[in-house]
Amino acid sequence: MVALRLGDRFGDGVFLGARDASDDELSAVHTPAYLELVKRECASLGRARYLSTGDVVIDDTSLAVARRAAGGAIVAAETAVATGKPTFALVRPPGHHAEAKAGMGFCLFNNAAIAARAHLRARGGRALVVDFDYHHGNGTQDVAGDGLSYVSTHAHPAYPGTGARSCDLANGDEIVNVPLPVTGVSTEAFVATWERLLPAVARRVKPTMLVISAGFDYVKGDPVGDLGVDIDAAGHLAAVINATAAEHDANIAYVLEGGYDINALTESIAQIVEASDAGRIESSSADPGVLRND
Picture 1 (cartoon, rainbow, N blue to C red):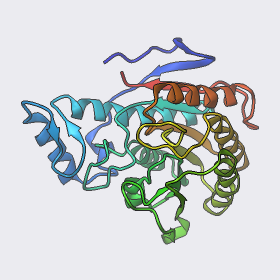
Picture 2: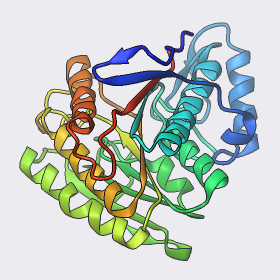
Picture 3: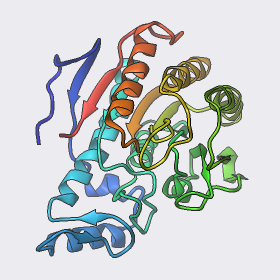
Picture 4: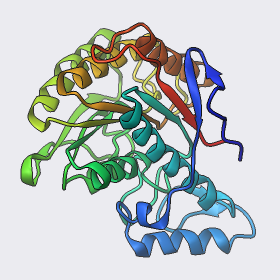
């Protein structure tokens, strides 16, 4: 795998290198038994097949790739704190369906939750995972609590069929789910939902870190998702995230989730970078960093 060096450019952003997540970092979210299962099943493969816990196709390289993706998410969060700039981890496989004890839905390790936990262990405070993927992040909901809150919009009852209800957790943590119809919503309604939802949840949670589960399969025409939402929504979402972070003096780390139309995916990410470049972050006009694990 090649990690791009500091100084390589994405628009006005700067590419940074990822690293592998350690067993200790992975085990802050996943059980040791699950981690050993992934190691064992990936190592024993002569050909690609499904992970025994769910619908994740694996081969003998999958553990290394997933470990690098999780590490990239951690570096994104660390860089956001160190620089005060938003950072985007361009990593795959995605992660938000991976529960503490099971991988599923293309996801081996929960990259966003692992990054949030690493931040909490290093610096304390509170983390809020913000998930606008077409699908509900059942894995992130599964591991929420102990300083980690979760807010999501998603098509329901689309895969994985979870996310119908919200709940309060101990010590001020929250799980907030907003199910959307699988038939889709207008772009205006989608953006307006987040304009009201994210500031309201953040004012209750008071996060010091926003980890964004950035899935772009909500975009009209996506072959796996498709809420009928225009590509232009990404820039508006970034503006809401920027304003919320500024209100709470929080850092921002984006972590790529779904999105299976390459043109919509790249344009959506470019809009998020542009939103930061345009100075829509009140606390900083600096460029976002971008990481990837290829």
